[in-house]
Image 1 (cartoon, rainbow, N blue to C red):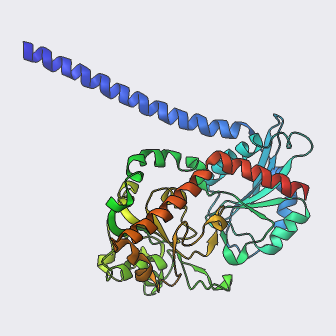
Image 2: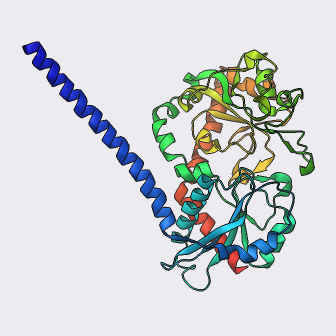
Image 3: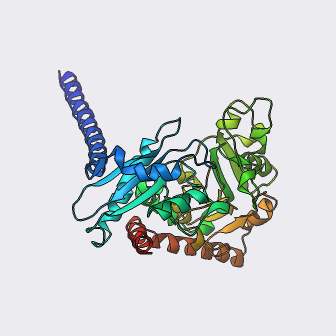
Length: 391
């Protein structure tokens, strides 16, 4: 009898625990939904909001099949408006659009009242990984008083009258706050105790034949590349993984084949590896960062990880690119990977001077990233919009 009673009691406890767990999960889901609703609640979708913008961008080229939106920002408790300025065949990425609505709503809140009067501010933003906007389109929009925002822009196409904003991963996570909190114990571990290797895992996104002097030479690689082509083997991420096989301190592997590599094999089977969580990345003295389709959007958390970030020269600019200094906040690697082994060899050294050099770079990176909180970035973009609107 006692055993039966104990079994029944345990069953009741298990049921209560399961119910509580499900309730917490439901609350989390509802909270996320409410959060998204709150962002949209302050906005009105208006098909007419983008009429002038649509005329300015009509017939544009140079950006492919891109989606873009316009946003009429208004303060003083007035509802801001948004609309679709350009619709691509793939359809709008609503995750990106929600991120833009969240961020720009926060920018309005941080505007110190200067958006409260008048007609507000109209901005244009490409809702794609690559937010590069052709120069003639930027000029046409600015001529009508529209301000162009972008999160990832080809270096060869960056213009002074484009305002850089953070990418959508930064926005969604509010500066990777939750991820960094979860990794706190590991990111505080002394660098000298971390594994003497440079680590990377990722998918086979990317571009090929991208020269430093001509954006026309940049070719994005999609899943429609013919199976017999060598597009997969020519991707920078694949090249890095293959090159790493001959370098003992490089733990660089492809963990997912997509786009050009979806129907092709990676040249060296040993260049493939399992996916690894961020907690594994920060166990190493070095972390490799290399462009995919655009710049690596996780840079913000990696720069605060306490590991040294080795950045392969990027073809893109982002919100804080110009604040990153090679040798001070990171170690740069040539775009063609010709010095990959030479630059990363630093992590294999055990002498005090080398350890101190790595610690100094990691500390500088961490200090800079702690200046780039979500709230400070929002306030900075609000200030830049004010300056652009009054120019």
